Length: 586
Image (cartoon, rainbow, N blue to C red; front, side, top):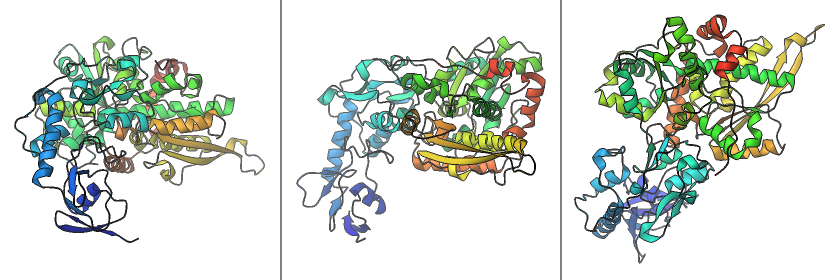
């Protein structure tokens, strides 16, 4: 391929045809400011912050959208370019509240950063704030349209990435702002509360509903016993905002930090991830053997569950009846745990630290009260835990390595990989294969279901030895599985199943791209690059675990022996399984 020669601020670079000025500038080591641009999204050229001068062009061009040609000469730092960018930013600021010190995005806001870098100390235009209502109705995702800069990144995240499509630009001209369908609140729409719009937003127009004060209040109450559980994806993302490189596993530092915050017990959601595999694997085998509804679809992603309830209510019987690991933990934390400790369950306050905003919604579902109380009292995102750690003045890099508490802190590598797309499937296959065949797996790593690819498929042959006789090998059972992450990919797969175009026995679906590592509550920015780094950290954690199969977790075995009885038994059914609700789109 012949390369184009492009001159950017006097520096010659050779780039492939189709390269944009923005990409060519990066190769030349020149930073061009952007707002509407996102590395994983389509080109929008909406904000015009990235304009540059191209010799021979009568007007300035958006660097994010303008393709290079051979011999092009570009100027990114002339006085005229700086003045245009400054004017664009000042016009954005006329609509934008100047409450940076109180904003959740303070010091992490792209508009604030560009304003600082442009040297804007005063705005020449009169300020005209919108004074629109803030929507916190969902209890999970909050919208503040007053801070919207109409970059439209959230629209693409909701529409193209997730296929939910409840956000759109409304009004015209200077009054244009991103709003919702029929101007309804999120609680009244088919929003799945996944938080991918939050991940896309460059400012504070979208955020999670903050519950940190409720946790501080509980920690400061001497009459309350506060326990915390941490999801697998949190431990490979938390460090990003606390002094560690992206993709660092900080499990033992995180555990130490949670104790310093004042939690009475620090437990691990991975424990109930292992428990989920025991219940879900047993449910799958029961459906296969007894003619149950197939394919069975995993149910640990609350955004996905809500999506099915809204958009495919006629297919709810395909969902596993298993609760998510978060909710299984909550049920046990207010039944099994106080029973073993001789405690009053009404005095136990359960906090979850999750990579997911939809988990806040899940914890408040009326079905999640199997213990007789609300099983999980408060859900914090990874970002909210970061805020608490910083408020407490903790430097986690200086803390000692500490382990989770027993009995709900022992887990396996299979529980850890729940945090990545394909992880639930891989964990299930490790257990189902060995339970059915009675043989050990030659390799525990199912590479075929790993990675950021939207949809993955595999087939696993299970030889059932009980059927063997007179020297026969046994009955062969071919199990077809599929994995999808992001709701747009999930929709494609479900449509194939619905129309009978594919024969699949077991499907894992994660609402967010990449799985929980890319959840709406994770540190920003979350891009495919950061997802890959976190995913690699998840699998390093798995590889370093002394036990890597859920059915070999001794604490889970003791739980069944002493409390639950057996998978799918009466106690398990009451505490660990649930049902779903048919919902309308509006």
